[in-house]
Length: 205
Image 1 (tube, rainbow, N blue to C red):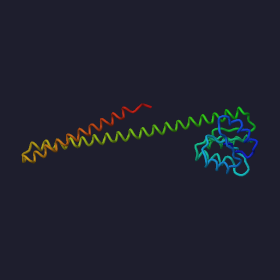
Image 2 (spheres, rainbow, N blue to C red; image 1 turned 135 degrees about the horizontal axis):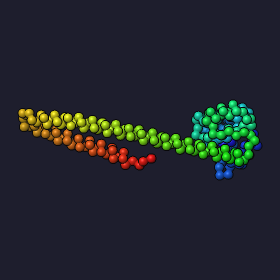
Image 3 (cartoon, rainbow, N blue to C red; image 1 turned 90 degrees about the vertical axis):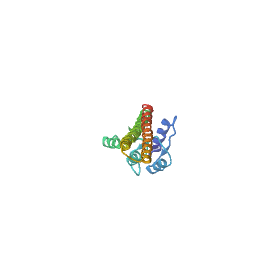
Image 4 (tube, rainbow, N blue to C red; image 1 turned 135 degrees about the vertical axis):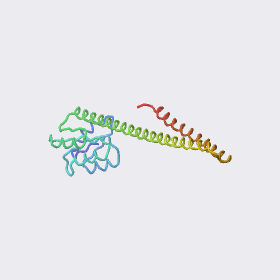
């Protein structure tokens, strides 16, 4: 989207960029806000000095609340304004008058950088999810191991109790409890092995 209060400037920019792209125009900050609310834009070229609100206000809103890249366009080469714009996160700064090639290069550079940053952010999110999953699996494995250790100690205590004098029916119940503990320990060990196999079978990268 091209945001500029000069129709001639909007027309020139649109004609240069519209090959292979859909380019919309807005003559005021308010009109640009309405279009941003109604649709999704990859890039917004925004004049700084316009009648009404400043383009810097719009650029700040876009950088803070949308996923669009912003390129500032201005007729005054002011280093202070340029620094302010770059600090808020714009992807380019064009000073009028500019050539068609300068416009194409600036837009292409902004879109490429924006795409790379989105890809990096997506990879970082995926890496963070994998780390959390690995942590949860490790916690699960640690809990299973703790359960096995406790069950094993209970089993040893029951086996020791069998060596003490007791009624035959009591001894039978103790043996049954030991057998159940053995089965529970086996299932817990298999669950741990399943966690580790799942972790090792996950594709790298």
